[in-house]
Image 1 (cartoon, rainbow, N blue to C red):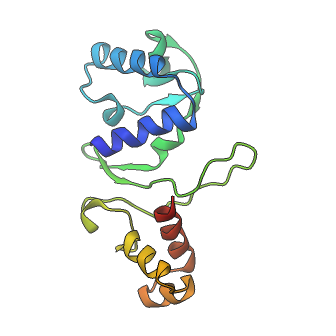
Image 2 (cartoon, helix red, strand yellow):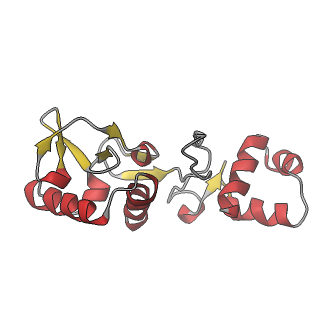
Length: 166
């Protein structure tokens, strides 16, 4: 849960530039008004780059502004978290593997996954820890050779390398 909170908070702060005072106000609002203990885990936040929003009664509410109704863009970090359908709890996290460049946005594929049931939650592709792939790459194995060895697409190997090189 802490990892998911850190991932969402990093995206809110770094990628979307939402100020810490706005984040604190939103988290306080959601905890108190919505009776949510861990807002970054239990709520699906959205942002317009300045404020944080939650959906309540089919409306988007500005949690940073104590409940004003608004219509912002979806927070991409939340799209990278798979939740259990029954409980709503996070079960998989697809970390970003590419740096963000506003002038040339490149979509991050969902290839590297952090799943507590695979490799103890460490980043992995096809069940192989990204660190293992990275170690062999640094030792001189080519992405094509690694792809053959692990039975993975070369794109998956390259994403594992990007993940570890970041």
